[in-house]
Length: 329
Length: 275
Ligand code: SF4
Image (tube, each protein chain N blue to C red):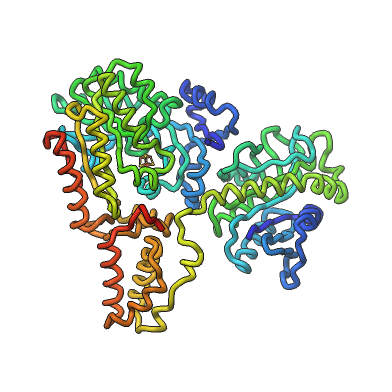
């Protein structure tokens, strides 16, 4: 899948680089000073790269812990995200990463220990307040797990910070490492779910909903806190049937009482990102149907947004207390 | 269209023959050969000639799906006749580098270092040529990185030295490697083809439609809005031609465009009957 590997000189001898290179031993290797030389230049075609991306192994400098966007919260006071990887192995048509980065190459930062130091400092500064850390903003948290060992490394660290909560957001079924670990009370594995029609139409390369539900079930059985993210809800003629069916299967296949939370959000993107995506896929219905610009974002009209959120909230409420349901506009 | 840029006639000859290209009459100052899929230009030696010819080609014919510099290169140890695709180009004089995304698996990429004259002190890490850096600099101004490639055939090494290379021997080497070069070229082209959007409206749909400006008075802002609404209309699978019948029932252009927008905002598409 990966066509070649770029390696920053600074991490040439890093143990995690060696592990990654072992995995991609047959691929051409190229050394560079800074990953920006490959990741940032103008004139790259995201769609073409996405078909056959390269891997870039680098060191993350500068800010490693960022304030999370408001739509990420499900409780707690302070919300941060961090990204050990930029870009994703899946190819969801609505993914804002397509609008955010010029390159579709997978950029993996191997200096995990520096992230841990920064998380530690953030937890320290928060005192007794509850502080949330999200992974899965710039990538899928688990999709690359067998190659990066991200969860295997970071999750155990959270046992030392009881007032910090880690949420891993994913569509992946790469849960083997988690099943081999002792579950932690302050770690939530949040799965993005959608109707079958949406998953098969616009969540290319991502595991089927059936497989995601199965992974969620296995994690619940193993004692992990699991959450569901019904986001982005997509408006299409059969949406009621599609989302009712999804929620029905969640009820049947999961222990809904034990779910940490369910959040709902409709499809929306900041104006700039939307324009880039519509340009990348001018013929895609997702960027044509029901979309309106409002308040710096492109998304569904207020009426459609309410329709989607109300419908799904109503259905979820039938099997879960409303205190566990979060609505994002 | 695939644009091929080659420095020397001796390097171009067998490619021209295999691709059955015919000479263009009005391509001075360059020699240009074409068929319905390829355009080949002989640029002359050196980075500057290559850069000028690349810019000229774009100026004369516009965009192409692929821009490929094919030519000979030296290497310390690589076998004469072997083929390399550049994944990095270095300008030997300025030290500037360019990384080229390779979207094809299983090929042998390498670094091409562009120098002003045939290199005597070869490093065994690089391939040496005299044009690639000029090519990439000019090509980057007119197209995307993924559409720019440099394919080199090793013409000399530490044993078969460049001083001993005459035109005849060069032609022989290029001729023997032409099939491999053209296979690589096709692989690169196919890898770009993978990016074709399966959801793009069919060409029939994109040719469909009518010129609103000919039927109605239309401002440039309305023209812009019409184009965007037309894109969305086709994307959801609705017929542009059928809009013409609706046009007469709307008093003004604004009314008509508002109506289109409200249709798009109020009627969801069916994924069971997806376009
Ligand atoms: S799984 Fe998430 S990060 Fe990956 S492509 Fe889909 S939306 Fe983007």
